[in-house]
Each structure stands twice: as structure tokens, then as C-alpha cells.
Image (cartoon, rainbow, N blue to C red; front, top):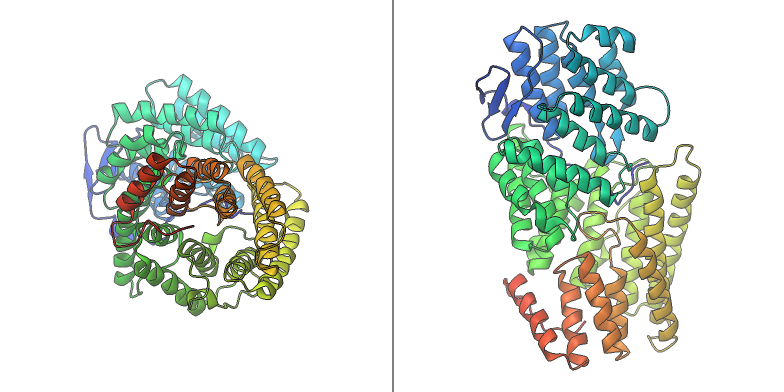
Length: 551
């Protein structure tokens, strides 16, 4: 099962736009693809065509353009049918370590085209180095649960790297394998190890996009993102025509609350994807991973009209698509409707437009359990905030029903995915938040504020226990922020200030948390802190939004 806390790439067909821009460098196995960077991965093939297509495939593989990479590796197979590493490359396109995705059957089929058994495939590789790569991949697609195979693959790639100390491609694939060990849930020490490897390769090969790309993935959390700013700055120039690479820079900008840079990166991505779609006769694309970040960033900047255009565009696209997600799909980016619901919840909560036309959206969600849960949370929260206790209670009951179904699905998994457990914990946070706000709404906010504060304190403890997930807050209303707002209303300003600072540690420069911090600090008599917070708000929302509204 794929959990909503994970994230996927910018999806768009890119291969047709890459074929005509390959420049052969020296030696012959090194290539540069204009707009996409360079790669140097020597192999034993005697076919110049096979080597060129293989190298192009590796470059695209590092950029997570998996379908196009597979096409390049298949072209290498056609040019040299006995070229073992070409089949290795094709099989690698079916495992996506950072996203905890693997099409095991497809990977095994790709390897099976070379030879029927691991022993025969190893014999087909003519050098010790290539045999090491093949052993690693056969471990990845061997028997047993995915977590065990991921570990064996990483161990084997570590061995390939040790045996070939000048092979920076081995080091990069080893770094990538490390980020796949925790099954989509960030493990800080392991990720930092991967970052160290990627950064060391970047120092030697600054035009190799994989080095910057993996460095970013390994450090795109608020505690470490500043150290990867050089990678974000570099990748935008190394691979200016790669849509996913442009989006990837925003992982660092998002983690640091650099909203102008984050928005620009995803505007660039959208422009590329839309241009590609236009060449294929399709219209603009509004749903998906990068677009959800773009809509979120527009709200942070105070550009509500631009954000609304993105959200409504995705809602219309999702309705036209008539795509219904499988009940077991927990990742909002796996369908247009899942994407639309996620964007809508963030918009309604972060604009605090509880009664406007956007808050009235009523989509047909059919069997899409995860989008249904997100939608009912947003509906209940908005109703509670506008004081409609009956509607809030009804929507909260619907949320709890969906939450129970999803928790049961995860509990029944034979080979549980750690990220699914994180997803269920996140739902628990949302449930505690709804219990607090709907109870207050049902009694006009006059009853049991202390009980609501206790509930939200418990919510913060659960949210703090979640592994960091990059992107817009997966807990749509960060619990520290919500508790801080309640405490300001109770005039417990010092406690509120601490909660807003905790919220900002998770989501730096988030506007609602900064606004709350300004109000709490002013209430506590800390005029300097209040002034700093309002100054940060003015710098972020330089499109006309007021930073001085009360939370």
C-alpha cells in the first residue's frame, strides 16, 4: 500500500523531447545530454550505439524519468543483444527506492531476457565489476520480502563500490539504495550517509545530476536542508530541461520556507509539463505532485487567486478524468482525484475561507478511501471553524468511518509497509484535532477549552513522533499551530508562543504559524519577537496580503 505521507514525481512523457540532443564526450562512454547533464558509466560493450544508449538510460534513470530510461536501455539491448548491463539498466527502472515502489515482476522479466538464472546472468557479464552489479540486482529481485531484498541490494552495492573505488556510479547507486532501506520512512542517520556520498561525488562531477539529485533527497528536511542549498542551486542549472529536476530543487526551498524560490521552481516544472502536453494535443496539467506544491506556495505568498486557479483546475481535471482510485491507494498523487482533494484541503485550511465557494466543493469520490478521509477532514474542520456544529459533527463521523476502514486495511497487510503505519498515525492526529474543534463548535466554543487543549497536546505528541515527510504538511492543520491558536484564545500567550515555535521548526516560515507567533508574542509582551514575526510575514506575502490579522 502506498501512503499519503510519501511523494512521487512530476509525471509527464518526456522521451520524445530528449532524443536529438546527445553530445558524445571523451572517452566514448561519457555523454552529455543538453539540458539534462552528463554521465560517465563505462561498460564492456564494443558497440558505440549500445554504450551511448546505455549511458543515456543511466542519466534518465538518475533523473527518475523511468519510462524514457527503459526505452534507452532497450535500444542498447537491440544494438548489442548480449550486453548484460543493458538488461541490468532496464530492470533498474522498475525499482524506485526513494518512493518505496517496485514492480518486482517487471524487473524479473527484464533480467530474464538476458538469461534464466542468476548464475547464468552473472556469467553473461564479462568483467568482475559488471558481475558485481548483476549480483546486486539479482539480490534486489530475488526471493523474500521487499525490505530484506532492499537490504541485500544495498549491501551488494556497497561491495561494488568498495571493489571499484573509482566508480562514482557505483557510489551513487549505493547512496540511492541507502535511502530505500527504510521503506519510504526517513531514517536520519542513513539519509545523512547517503548525502555524504552524493556530496563527495558532486565535488568531483558537478555536472552529474544524480549527485545533486540524491544529495537533495537525503537532506530535504528542515534540520539539514540548508546544507544542501548548493545542490538545489546547481541542479536547476545542470538539468534546466528536466521537469523532475526543476521540481526537486523545491524540496530544499520548501524545507526552508523559501517560498519565492519554491514557487518559481514549480512554475518552471508546470511550464515544461504543459509544453510537452501541448505537443501531444493535451491541455494544461493542474493535478499532481509539483502542482500541489505550487498551489500551497501561492497561498503562502498571499496569491490566493493563483492558488484557487490551480485547485479548481485540478478539480475539473479530476472530474473529467472519472478516475477512481483503488481503495488501497493511500498516496494522493496516484490519481487526479486524490491530488485534487489534497490540494483542496490545504487551500481551505490555509486560506481560512470557511464559507466561500471553495469550501462547498462536493466531489464524487466513489471507492477512493484515502481521498474520502482527507475530504471529510477538510469538510469537518471548515464547518467547525464557521460555527456549524451539526455539519462538523456529521463530517467528523464520516471521517472516523473512513479512518477505521483504512486502519483495518493496514492492519491486515501481510507484509506491512512502515509508511502505512505512519499514515495511520497521521490519521490519528487528524482525528484528535477534529474531536477538539468539533466539540468546541458544538458548544459555541464556550465549553471545555481545557479538554480541547489536552486533546491537542496529545495530538502534538503523536505528530512529533512521525518521521519527517517532505512537502506541504501531511497533517493538514499542524497540531502545534492549532494548539497555539487555541491557547491565544485562552490568553495563555507564553504557552502559545512555544507551540508556534514548535510548529515553525517542522514547517519553517509557514504563514499561519508566523501570524500566530506574532499574536502570541505580542500578548506575552515580547514586542521584539512580534515585530520579527510580522517582518517575516511582510517579506513572504509581498503580494498584498495583510500580515496583521489575528489568528
